[in-house]
Amino acid sequence: MLDPTTRTRARVRCQVPADDPTVPTLFRVHPGTEALEREAFDLFGIVFDGHPDLTRILLPEDWEGHPLRRDADPGRIPVQFKAASNSR
Image (cartoon, rainbow, N blue to C red; front, top):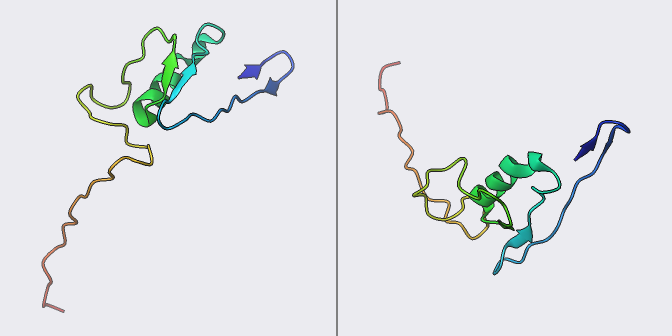
């Protein structure tokens, strides 16, 4: 959050339990948090209680899970190597 009159900044930090990642929304106080809360929901699975439109913003709607959580499966993408060349 930024106060343009005094040029001061404030950051809100809180710990969220892994078994119930729910915190109250800041949307009513600061409407500019709408997209940031949706992003945190999308990537980390944090539920913002009272948010007007808590839907995915970056990932497809059919995506399962939240990729930046520590318990998320990182998945594996096989690395494609070019065939070895014998010409020098």
